[in-house]
Image (cartoon, rainbow, N blue to C red; front, side, top):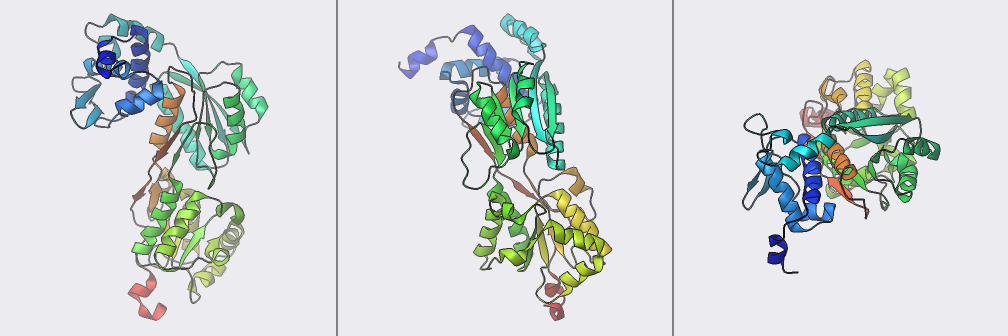
Length: 387
């Protein structure tokens, strides 16, 4: 059918209302001035024609929730200045009828590994974002990863979707997907792995690259990497791949055995701070450390302090994830922001689409650098005798 004829044909009322409801929930998690997905992206997500998407967008525009800027896109308005609620949409009784069903809370089942503050912070953000969309969260924390019995128990609640936090949950997420459930996973897949379920994650390789580049641009040429789990796992991660790429671009070789600070070594330093001081005082010692996570970096900061080493004067440290613990640390931690709020928003968007999921989709978010006070020039730049 020609595009002009397609646009002239009025879409079914119920379809545009469903899409408007999903977009309304999406904008509730966004800030004023933030751009919505393009019409083409929404068409692909909802599996509908252009006219249906544009009609749904028109509903939100009349409500004052969004505005269209020619040649630029569609943006969220400031609801505090002229935006109408869904129940105040002028002259559209169908929207008022839709809000009655919106008030009926839906459930999403959330599975998370209970072993990192990142995952716990992720769940906190999921609960807050879900509440804004009138969703009830049923959460199951596991010490390692969820099992099939957990999935079966939650299926009895008939949730609208299953959200898995962490790639440790991928096997159960795949089982949920194959059983016909709506599924989304938040978490970085291993390097060279293929995602078989809808997944949202930050570009971990670029994130590792950004962290290393921060230290390189400060003048560091001897950079260690702090990773507490077994080191063999690190070398399969995209974040490490980005770290290596940055060092090699700078003309530096990477000695995997000598450049990684693992969990046992960090624990030795915590028990014997003098051994840590000796490690960083020896000739050729690292002057900068990139940590896998903010909590690991903060632990390193405290151990360095007990060893009488100053950050960043003696050793520079950069974390990862932009968690509150890093901002509250002393000194405040340089870090890489994965934009967890965006990851959560995309995951909920995938779970609340009105159409069934018909294909594996992924959303890749670009991380950014957060500059604070924990990185500086290496000691050799300030004191040539220490080079």
